[in-house]
Image (cartoon, rainbow, N blue to C red):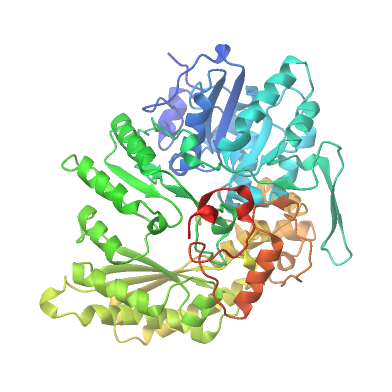
Length: 620
């Protein structure tokens, strides 16, 4: 029987003690003394969020298939446990063995969103691991960062020993093999980092030096160690069917954000939306075969007892075998109480037909993501969606019995005008009107259209990485313009409008395109109480603004300044598969309000063809 790291007294005094005890269905149990490598995998957010993340489930399953390796999990302690652990000097521990993270060989931290950066420092400090990589001696774990935010690792460069750029199945095992080799040879921490730096996709921040120009932009970014490469290339899996998936997903004892089996059907996207980082860094589109997905769908549902399966991808409608997969799931699990969730669908006749088979129309709402209120701005962002398509999709849905629609937009996009902003309300009104054009006898009560707008943040490796970002005041002003237009609509009572926090968005913008100088600001904010920044009830904007002031950093330098086309970016040393030349072309196409065809219609020469796989090699 495992001895829990927290006493009964502590567990009874905090919310959701099940967050910290482990023992979930399908948790892997190994003898730590019988393995060569112990890997603590951290999600720097609360358990319910981390347990919903597909990437950790995939790597947890993959790592634990190795007999010489034990992968265990750790999450950020919630706000009620954090002070108790500090007061009683309880080191942060893993769920599987309840042992301190500081005793492991590796601490891997996934970086899914910028607003988790102070939680990264919380995980390190509570683990009693020095925050700065340069202060870690031989007895501490190697701290690895990965995930989408690793495509600009520079704001966190001081806190990590290395970053893994790309997909975990590609070279992680080779990295582990080099660790074992170095350990057997009695090599040092630095020697291992030098061995790691020679692998594709591995970036060791301490092996590089940055200089800046008088205007604050980067002058040079060069290796200072002979083992480091001038360019770090992302790594991907070229054939998805050659890597194992999750046969026994973890099943939590408490309700988590995404409490279902998740089946990844493809990686990448063909659409080329110019604001979307995932659509660029996960290129090229690669699909799983239908037989592969059938096998894992059945295995996962049997091993978990879950009652819902969700098909995961950036754009599910673009999966070429979607009809066959959905028909299989409907037939296979008919009468077994299994729901099928289909996110990321483009609303067309097939999608509506499928959803009507798998969803309770009276309880569910449809989701559209027009992103922009006008056709002009949708062309700027290369959304590939016309008003005609949107209205037809809505009308077809209403005729099929739906009466609730969610719409997602962005405010602050490049070239946005008042007309574009007001277009959000006008499009919402047209959708409501489409409902009332249906004969009354065929309607399902009143229509409800909920429009939500997030605020635009330019991300690395997108055509908009050169774009200026709005100030907090400008974001709020734009939201008020939209809200005012909604009040003018005839169907105002059927419409609802809400928007994201502007303060949070501005900070996200700084962290997204920041350089190494931002690390000191992150640490200062953390020292003064910033943690769980993605949770609006805990976000302390004043703490962040004071941290910027303390270090003489102007947030506007990273947000409101439009970049020159030849500026050196903090992430330029990474080859993410899409070339800077392609992104520059797309930036010019955006300013010219010109669309670029999707990858299945025409190759645009983005650079992803060099991987030798996926949609780039489909027969036209």
